[in-house]
Length: 392
Image 1 (cartoon, rainbow, N blue to C red):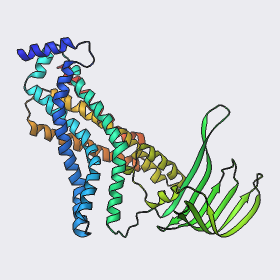
Image 2: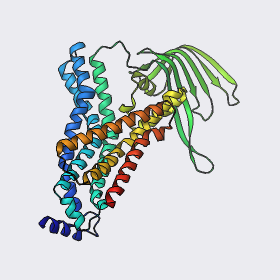
Image 3: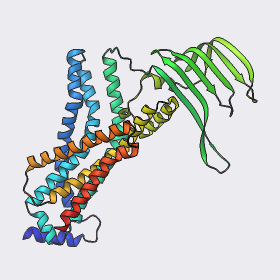
């Protein structure tokens, strides 16, 4: 009776306020299990994804323990990001199931609070966690994952080279405006190398359009970065100087030629980053480079991964909605049952995620559908369950 009066006063006081006392009460109940879930799931993901691999490197490759510990610490942000959606599901399911079992949700409904209004705090918290996931994915995870891979490679001598060996492209652009004032990119220089052996580029071709039109083509057998002078040294090549009418103005042969170019092509070749080691902006830049190579399968996979980077944080909203709706169903389930249900839902979601990604990689689904369909399916299921529960 007292709980009913208390909840009624909560609802009456905040009925016209967007963020009510009831909202703060429910979010306060959601936070402890969410933090518990982050710790539990992050530890589980880290153990499955990184710990076993590091332990194997310690035994088989003689990886120093200090380096192994550093790699695990650097992999922790990635594990935390994967734990955010799982923890959202666990927190909403545990909290709403407990409140339902203790008749607090029944008291809320007796005070006129609809099911839609009761799950709103869970959705609000899920949106905040979605924002946190975006920040982690963009600012922390790529840099930490890249550093972890680099640390592991530097500590272990591997027969597999860590650098990109073939077809190194690097285009340079400048922005201009057309007659209508619309911005457009114009290619000013294109750097291409057939291969990279870890020290030198081989089979170099430089197309120079820095003066507005094609003005020079440089072909060289090899080239390397000169760190002392911050310049490229090209060897055994020919420079073709192009006149404004596109005819050859002059042909210059050289044994060694210094050419002012940025170090970026070498950075691209030294270690090819995985999509998990790049944020969304860097992934789009990589996509532009891959388009020059013409490898349709690689381009398609990268498009799918980019869309997944954008779609993944919204899984928090999906899990928050599903967990809160399932939790509002009158039942008496303990923490163990809530954890078990969470694992089933998480497993089903990630199986669907892997399945649609494979279809996207194969070109059966478009990158947008492949990345967003798990969220769309989960959101549809959550809304369907919500309407069913609200009618009871």
